[in-house]
Length: 372
Image (cartoon, rainbow, N blue to C red; front, top):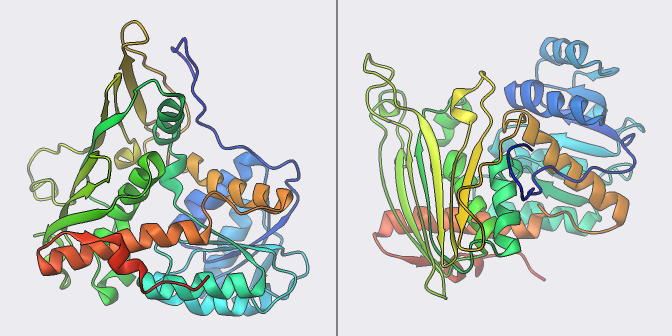
């Protein structure tokens, strides 16, 4: 990090042993262009890959120097070199894959994609399966490892901003939609908003309730039926703190001929300071690092740390590093399954709130949860 007299921690802690064999299930964009790029940069050890299309798996294996290619992920699970499984499949397939993974004693850890299943109830089942099998589960909520998000967590923990008063995220960006979203009828809440909801939890803990309002995305509704296109929501905390987000995947007719104004901006106001920043992802594949600017009554002027790393793909090393360190230290990862259930509950509460036009408490959703 440069241009800051008060350095902030923003990089993940890496395991001492990077030789643990990683088996990769899935060979799409998120695996080929994010996970594996970040893993190789971090020195991790992917040893096997499987995909529903063997030609695609072979192509990705060649690109990333992976020795073993399987035409069926079930064969990959029997490979004795595989100790950790990285799953990158659509959410409606993930439960089936995890059920197969936990049958194999050589598998010690699983990195699952977000969302963890199709809904909160299914996420609870996945967590329970891993718990019963003694398999350590981490969930790939990779925005926690975005450079500005992680540095801001350090800033909050250090107390530079004082008591948080208000936080906002303003997303004006057009994601690349996946084909499986059409069959599930999802657009924003479980795909993009889940990042912001999890980030609010990471920064500030769990809210008591949420109020959400949604409408369709005019562009996407021409392709498939959905409800959660443009999403607005407010999180209410017991101490009076409030957080809100506007997740706008329309952004105006930016793909229809008008000029673009694309970006993700966030802001935190505290009693003692103010922090604001940007998320660099919307410019992908152009490397655009996220930013953080902050000021405090305890310091002089604005502090503007900057980084060379970017969310896509560099931050994707973080969730796997978290899992590998947890296995090495015989503890739960930061992004463990039980913690992620609260993010899934918050997403579920947003859907219920939007449908019923009322504020929904997390306790309403968590009453359906996994047993102790």
